[in-house]
Image (cartoon, rainbow, N blue to C red; front, side, top):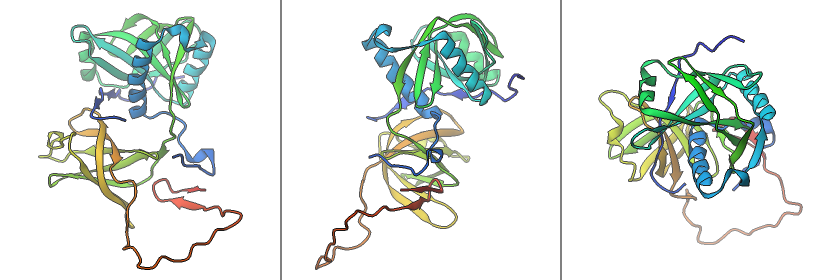
Length: 293
């Protein structure tokens, strides 16, 4: 297999701004089985707490053969894994994306998903571990660092890795949904990336002279979601997490109102009927353009 020629891309550390129903799909193909970048970084924070509270022996082990199979599957999909670093002086953590190359034995090569300029910060960080996505789980591996340069990091795999966390709520990828975030009369535009029953993930881009410093993460924001046909959601949200970046950022938002009353209460309530058996409701969700039951 050829080495990936795509430009590397940094996953900036996420800043936590607050505390972080189940929808059933008619087909498993309607949901994204892979863990998104935001979720990978979020679950890494959870895995750090698990590591501090429990020893490695308390977690489910994953053998080296299984690790190699999962790494080669990620390479086949042309996907990425997470490589984690810690600052030598301030102990802050940095997470980078890298593409694993075909792995047959103990040695693993990963190609950075970032430009050479963006990797200069690694001079101040030391290697910690890697996280391998496995469907809705993440596997933490602590390999030995062999060498690292501006193009590749080479690691020696240990005998075991450990399953550290699992995504509890399925997230659904969205298609062609425009997102507008408004706060203090400032308007930022972007797209809705995915959602679940409790939160929405949007990616925003700045247009000069805009800056993300205009957004106060501790104050509510107004979010409008629409496409070329109509507006599907407009409401007040709380910023749960956000990434770092000057030109684009990812925001995880939680709606502050769970139910919206669109019409006035009737003076006299309509008669209610109890249907037996209960009917099934089948509809096409406007965010995903998929059928749901």
